[in-house]
Amino acid sequence: MNFCPSCGAASTDGTAFCASCGASRGSASAAAIPTAAAGIGSNAAGALAYLAGLITGIIFLILEPYKNDRFVRFHAFQSIFFNLAWVAFWIVWGIVGMVLGAVTKGLFLLLQLPIDLVLLVCGFGIWVYLMYSAYQNKTVKLPIIGAMAARQAGL
Image (cartoon, rainbow, N blue to C red; front, side):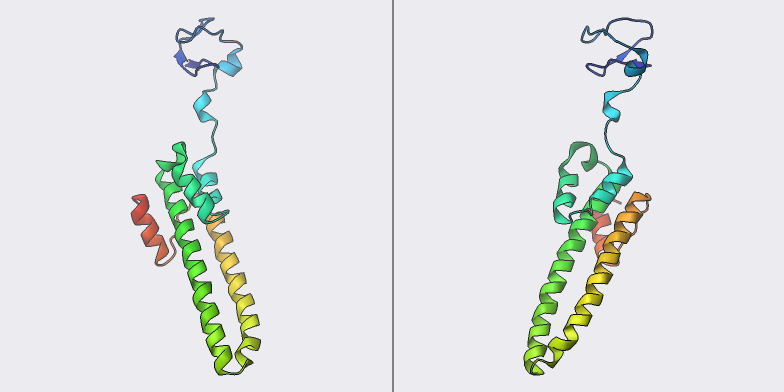
């Protein structure tokens, strides 16, 4: 089956003009490619949902071809929930660090810097792993966040 390069309507073989819009069908190679197939795959969309966290997660929940795909919806929700949890963790950790720094008269602040670096590397590693897993068409669920995302996505 061939498709019209102008409107994308299906047309029978051997016709020179589209029955739907009247446009010339042009070359056979251009007419054989449907216009609806011009998007990114579900795996790439799932991986890109993690790229900028909340922003790309919300974007992929709004975009038309991806908002109905359960795989993309799961990764978009997990990206949003992971970033919200990550920000909340750093707020609580900062408050705990300030309190312990005041109690220990600044001694804990010297220990907090290496701990912060380890936590940052771990968070970055989780983020990269989630993107890689989504690109490999895997649905990796984080312990609490993954169950919430699966429930929201309908998995």
